[in-house]
Length: 170
Image (cartoon, rainbow, N blue to C red; front, side, top):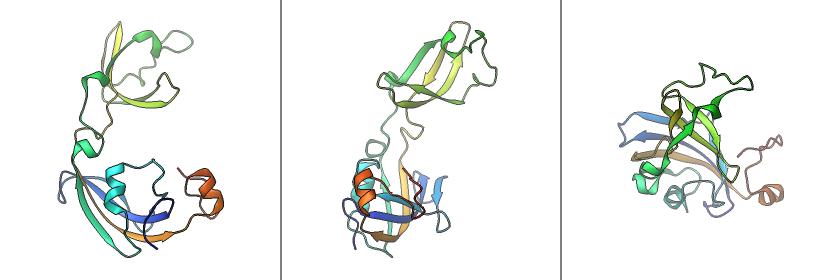
């Protein structure tokens, strides 16, 4: 079976910053392979285009420019928020919360979780960077397809991989 829409794909991969010898950003190996439903909008479209049609046992290696990956950093994603939004119920700031470089989870207007990195803060406001952590990076992917199978009825309904033990995975 080849990788196509709604196929359940199991693969290994490494993603590196820039090129094959760049710093390792993430690895999924045979002990902890990546399993997902192909073509349901949860993966980078350009990434899916590169593995479309591959079969079990086939390898892959390709580069995604920032525009095809997580975009280029945007000044529109640099946010300034009032300091009081970070206070607890006693109107105090937890010193472990506001640490430069630390990520916090915000909720956007649609109720969606957004990760943002704390850039700086003062007595009035907190400045955050809500660009994706990999924005601006050229990503090099390499790996191998371990298995491709048809989805179960439950997987088709839920549009996601479901482990044989019934544990749902995104």
